[in-house]
Length: 271
Image (cartoon, rainbow, N blue to C red; front, side, top):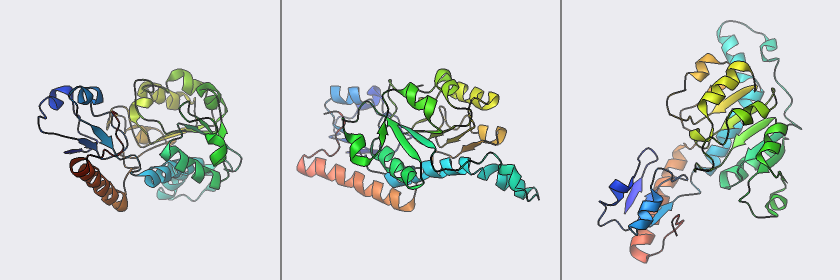
């Protein structure tokens, strides 16, 4: 069995050399780094660990959201410069009643939604892959189009995997359609947001700010945090906690064992 970290790409060239590999386990949620189609071609099952880091990423998304809304970055920087002025955070708005819009409502999206509800947000989501009635089960509002979500949200938080469908899902048209007082949060995958469009959005004030844990070409683009006081960038760390890493390693090992010993493929992504 082969266990993969998210920074390792497994191409068809690599896969065709895995003569004795009976299962590939991507020890995390996303598996776009693995050529799943090639693995299927060579009859190698690919599994992931979809419940890994759920709490951590949801917490991180909310931390970025609240930090932007409460103007923590400019306030902290101002205090460091020796000032003591609440007026520095004059762009701060009351959380309760704001629309928290989510793109994708899988495990992490749902966990984020529950946290946003607890803070008083009016949580709405766009996810054409969730079954009808899912919104009723968790008490959210469902919207029928991405356009509707982008126009009405005060916060747009991304919780979708990276696929050909979602690559550059958020580009110039979507960012221009957002409220000028809205924030964009991305703790999913960097290429879902077109970097050039986001840079222009921050530069020209199409949106009020961005909280980014992922970038289109990491670490390129991290300088946005230095250039814009309304941009927070963290180094693809939303998944991390000591407990999460331990859980990930154990889950991956269990997945390998179940495949090799019992012929049971947990969370198979190329069924």
